[in-house]
Image 1: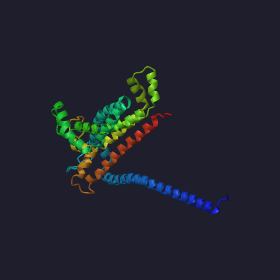
Image 2 (image 1 turned 90 degrees about the vertical axis):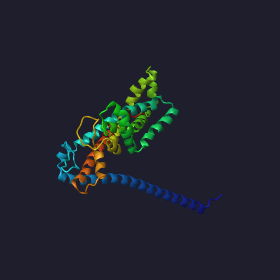
Image 3 (image 1 turned 90 degrees about the horizontal axis):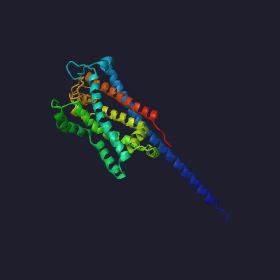
Image 4 (image 1 turned 30 degrees about the vertical axis):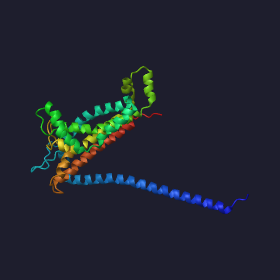
Length: 313
């Protein structure tokens, strides 16, 4: 039977038009995805530019060495001083306390979910644990003020005041437990089952396999979760604003009130500081320093992951 040239030509035209439409659709999707990526990048660049511009104006009035190494911060007083060390010390104190709470609890939770929990228990416990990440941080702040300090810390330390770095640090630690547990559990579960079976075949106990085989194999992911948790703790705002107090001081006693970098920012924006004044510009200097601290932690986290990551086939 003879073929129909018209039908053949029509089919070719349809195929060609379909390919053209498909190519146009792919280009449109690619352009949209590129635009979304550029929005994220430009937003970050815009934040950096604004912080740097306003911080530069602040450093024209306050010398950079005085800001970085000064030991007195009284930006809102009649005789202001802009030594940021008390704010940095308060931030690091609360972050350290939070990590002492979150790291062991988060890692042990991750180890249980990865190595010991049954699938049914894991499906119940892990979502329940991650619900903590959805609790508003201001609720943790009220929890620290109304429960942690009076019910837990007051009986142990009768002289503790209404605000303290310890209460704030414990609340921040509870808040970041899901972050440590979830990321560490993902890292532990990514270790091949063959390594576990090999350890058990050599006569090792389940505990020995978990801590001497699985945990070292997932070390990069575990360390990365620790560093990201530290970055999250450093940037926490509402908990420290409610529970830590607003007294910027260099102190080695966590039972005393302290002010963090984010706490100072909240205090200033909730007041009546004149835009363009030195106290107002100090917000951007503190914000820029906070940004650089968290950026450094994130870069270090990426380096740890790339340096110590184990690749399994």
